[in-house]
Image (cartoon, rainbow, N blue to C red; front, side):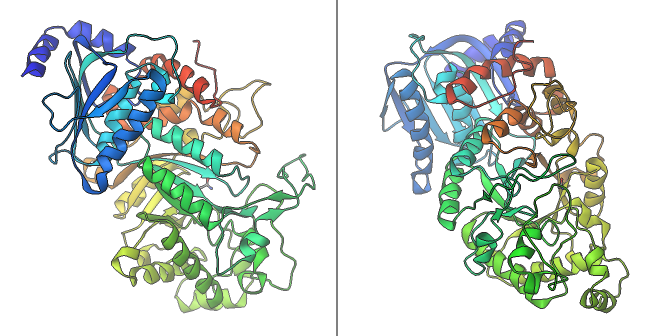
Length: 547
Ligand code: ACM
């Protein structure tokens, strides 16, 4: 009743609400939010009522919050048995959608409702953003002595279920700690899919027990810098990979932050490192020399899809991926796969004839079809859905059925629409402007990367996902994703510099209703996160921070 009364006041004070909304540095902007009169002041000992849930998982989510709150403010938390005397209540409400939450704050109490632990996690991320940035950072705040937050009513849920970020570690590898930092950045902005691009022409980064040479040979190359134009390979021995134990650790870390990992094994193209490891059955021309690539670009040294041992190789890898990644999706790549070597190879020529096609792209589809059938025959708990880059649409996709997902990058809007019209799900990751490894500004001080600086924060923010898509296709659009390719990026701190703050812009496109998005308002809010970045030691682009 108390909340109702306060909110009646809110309804009468629209101007104040709008004004207040502008200064609350919430990213992504919630779907519905009304600021109310008054504020809640945290007591020194916060009494918390937390609803029960399988595996104590709401409590675990609250514990993470509690730890950060305590580190920043010194406030302690005490559990109470009922909501009546609590300062903060986390209450199950199974009528809400999976990622949705309600957060009501009045002078007396903070009241959170959600149907699942993830909803509570997001509510608590929002609550942290209502506080000084030290709370999100979990770092002691010596400036603040009165821990008050505005009375507010938020009803929030994401526009899209897929809010992703892809990191290419095939070209350069950054290590476990850097990957965890990336996951932390994603979690700050309620992103929920980490697409981990683990294999490339220039390096294989995941231990596969059945094929040890993939990392013994394929994980290493004779140059740190990748050749391009006048830039020559530098002759430095470079590489590395993630052991299966490392992967398990990162999977746990991501799960605690409600982020699913999508491992990508990019086959049969972008596979020169694999071909160099096992040329005897992966190469179209095993008699020639094959090495992990030292150059940027698209290698023609692709897997011989007509060799049954190559198909078995891919199936064996899928088995290990299923064991390692307890999530819904596996990405099999499929982009930029030259067919020139298949065209010269007798077995490939014969297979193309046997499948009744004269389009070499269909050999790639036939390869995937065998892998998809292999997964489909597995028990329920081992089922995984497959994602492909949009070039797969250049073949006859009929054998693959419609229960695959197309990640649209080149000509993204048209490709996504094509996928949706074929009945497939799709994810928007438009090269321009969502490849956030590209330069975010021009000028001599920018680190070497692709592009000329036109993918600014503003350009990224202003891309409109699912723009003018007919209503009957919209349910095929799963969401948005920023991608980060690392041809030029040798150092994790540059990954952060290019990611931030642009990833936050993509996160907001994935979460906030289009009509509530506004760049000038976003800019004001993101400026407050500069302190968070400083406290966390995250590198970031400062271009719009003082505009
Ligand atoms: C891609 O950018 N090659 C997916």
